[in-house]
Image (cartoon, rainbow, N blue to C red; front, top):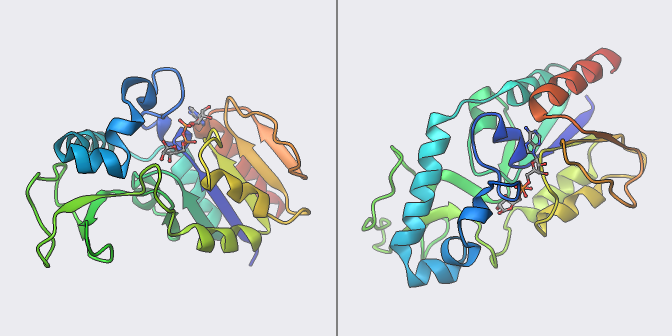
Length: 229
Ligand code: APR
């Protein structure tokens, strides 16, 4: 079975009603990264950071997967599919995708500030301010903040390097190290980039740019791949 690796960003969830970060009206226009999305911010004002992620979680819980998420599930009928998402929402899972890796964490989980392996699912939208892990340390959102390592990066690189087909959807490719992933795909591998504002990418051979919204561009591409392979 051929392997398809799909690298997604906020754009794939935009049509589900979840804000992107860098588009006009995006989250980083309304919030200051240094106040809500860094370890220093959490140390300084944990309540503000928890409030910020509680609001993100509420939005995610109200959202539903869209045509792009659903189309990616169909791809599994014919290919071995690995999704690598920068998104913290769970819309790929709720659509039914089996193999989903979250590079930047997961909004519906919290973890111990002292023992990162102690990860807990939240039952509802709100992370309370005062809960602790089973070893007594405060909990934090299970998010990779700016300035933190991306623990799954190495595994993600391995997946991309072993892809037979590589698809990029809805990401500005501005945040590193995640954005560097695209350069690990083999030269001869067909690559597709679906994003209405996709910029051309230098030194990425076999790249087809599809300047469309994810909700229309993704089902169309997937139909084509299911037919030809
Ligand atoms: N369909 C496809 N793409 C879309 C759509 C849509 N309907 N709407 C917007 N986009 C595209 C934009 O053109 C843009 O290129 O989605 C992209 C969103 O870019 P960003 O807001 O920068 O989001 P992303 O690339 O996922 O950001 C990476 O930055 O702040 C961090 O941790 C956060 O994981 C995130 C990372």
